[in-house]
Length: 320
Image 1 (cartoon, one colour):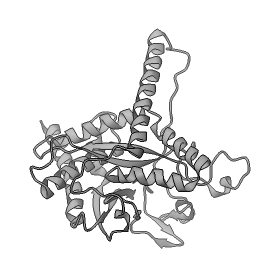
Image 2 (cartoon, rainbow, N blue to C red):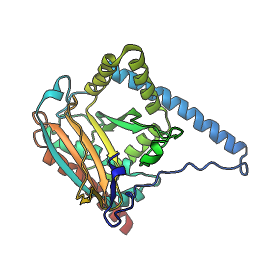
Image 3 (tube, rainbow, N blue to C red):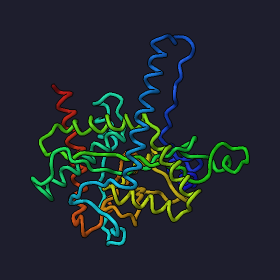
Image 4 (spheres, rainbow, N blue to C red):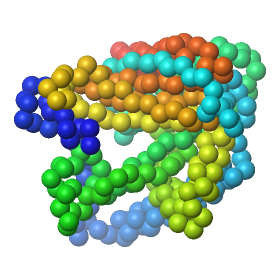
């Protein structure tokens, strides 16, 4: 809705240019043989297995299982604690450079690798030689499952026969990252993140979580739906999101925008991170419970250093 009311700074009559959505390419009849059929069956089998595994994990996380306590763990009641905000700033060109170093990698993979590396660095600083290698730190991410994501024309939304849907339609996925001591290859964080995200993409976890929430809301009402969401947040450590913003500078009601920042509050987690790109830059808002994480500025630097380490690793590899 906000973007639909904005215009490009260099063209007052044009809507902001957003990152184009990816189109799925389906092969025609030519080239379909037994190997193709085997590939489809194998793809379907993996989807079923990953969906069952991740859906079961989602249910357990929502009801029973929680992360091991660390220096960044929140919990019941933390949503009422005082908050502190810091911003981590990145260049999209740096993220794209790192992305190209590993085949078929996305900006989301790079972001998750940065988060894994940054949190490991921060925990090393706060609690050195305390945590065991490979400790799991679970995050929550919202996934847009609308059939037509992205910027929609308001005039088309007003039509009765439109396929575009008003309102939000989000599923939830769990995104585990793992603590690793300093000295590891910076790109290993990215490779681990990509391997995990690829499995998530191959499942229907987001659709399952949406249907579960919708079912609980329909049968038991908003009270129990909120309890389910609250329990899930209490059992995890952080919330993470990434929104692709306009490719160029834009204006709102004739006023140029220097940056666009998004955030949430009132979550029982001690840390929430929301990144949004805008005109070649990306800023991640880091909101923390300041009694648990008193130095979010240092945490922001940890994420910035994580990207720079990955960039340096890529440049060294290219020179070799």
